[in-house]
Structures are given as C-alpha cells and as structure tokens.
Amino acid sequence: MDQIKSQLEDRREEVVNFVEPMATGKTSVKKTTRAYRLWIEGKKLVNAQFNCTARYEIHYGPESIELCINEEGERAVMASRPVIDLHEKRVGEIFNEGDKIEVKYYAHGLITFRRA
Image 1: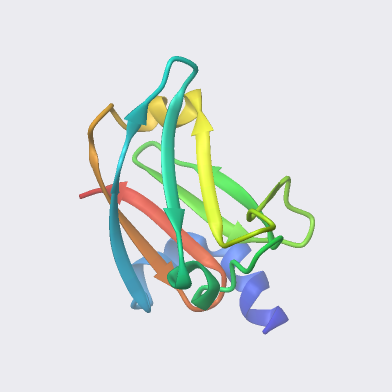
Image 2: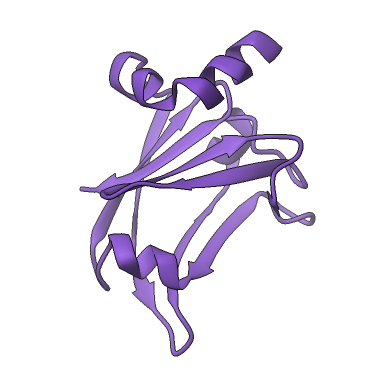
C-alpha cells in the first residue's frame, strides 16, 4: 500500500490516465461572498481511503484539482463524518461558478475534479 501511495504522489497524471476510477460522481462549483466551493461527502470518500481525519494534499492544475492522501498533508477530512469542503479562491481560478464537475475516486487515495 505504501508503494502505491508513493507512486500516486510521484505519478498522479499517469494514474489518472491509465487506472480506472472505482467510482465517479458529480458536483458543481458554488460561489460564496468569500470564495468558490467544491463539496463532496459520503461512502465514496471512505472507499478511496479518505476516512474521517485522514490528511491529504491538494494539487492544482490548469484544468483540474487532485486530492492525494498524505499523512503530512495540510488538510484533513472532517472529523465527524466523511466530508471534504474546498472553499477557496483557487477553485475559482480553475473553474467557473456553476460549472458541472466530474469527480473520480481512485481506490488508493486519489480524487480528481475536472469539468464535466
């Protein structure tokens, strides 16, 4: 498992291009007075290794956002239930308000957000 996580961190793009996600979902970008928001929750998070309090890091690309499990990550899944709330201006630099977003969940600790 540690080897797979290391490969994910080093070769995220290859994983996204060659490994089938275990689940997919949809969300949309919301705009608040403070920033832009992407919100996901539920069993798909847990199945992708994003358990309550799991730490992760965020990678921002020109057309996507990727979340990777990382014990030293700056962010954590909500403690009370599996929720990830990305509420920040950088979301708005990649996506527009109201964009429909496809979320892909990978079994070894990777979640991607791309315009649907």
